[in-house]
Image (cartoon, rainbow, N blue to C red; front, top):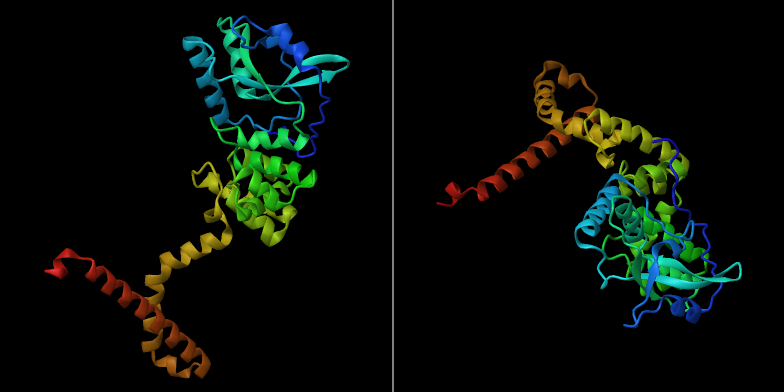
Amino acid sequence: MNNPALPSADHETNLIGGNIKAIKNAYKRSDAMYFIDVKDIVVMGGYNVRVETESYQAHLMSIVDSLLSDGFHVDSPLAVYPANIDGVDKPVLIRGHTRLKAVLLANEAGANIQTVPVVFKPKSNSPTDLDLDLINSNNGRNLTPYETSVVIKRLMTQGLEPKEIMQKTGISLPYIDTLVTLASAPHRLAALVAHDEVSTSLAVDLIRKYGPVTAQRMAIDALERAKNAGHKQATVRNLPEAQFKRAVKKAAPQLFVVGEAVMNDPGFAGLSDQTRAELMKLMQQIQGNGESASTSDAGNNPEDAE
């Protein structure tokens, strides 16, 4: 993956309201539905926050297959905003980017879908309203955590407070805080999260503990360890401290045996009082945990209940 393009939180949805009647009259049918030629729908660069991952591509192609077999469902219209672009009133796509992309691909395969049904977003919609629509309207395939973090950052740049975002989107305050942290990830780390190579929780934990730059380096190292272990995604389990804990846990039974041997060794009495006290305390803790586990297992054994 070589420096992939990612959606930007710096995008400004700054559309000038156009004449909605002009566009409606140009595409109105006798049944009052509005069907617009797919070639006339304007796709605003930078507005859509979808990252074209492998799973997204699979989703897209499933829609293409549906269009080829069933056509475009008129009960699922696209949403457009009537914008004035260079003095000309044009329909700008606000909702349905994946479906429009699928239509174009289906047409390349012979679908011949010339027009699609649309609904018009009111000109009174603010840039904030249009960005909120990215979160609130994507029910067919919810935005990923990274995609959502981009929108959250845009909304906060526009002046919305976390509580306002929570009220308008239904996203909890703790999760908004998580997304804000994720939005601070450097480009390489952001790309790894966006493409499901590093988990959101790992990226956020590392950023909070070590800062964005160090977090990126540690995430890249964790991903290498994950791939060496046959995993596609790096998670907390691939951090060095997690691997150390697993190694200690695996070696614990043998460590206990060695500890007992040390305590029974004639030389044990020659150790300092502090060393002997710490070792004995540790051995008692391990033994106590083992006995608790055995008691718990016995209590759950149906044969012991008889």
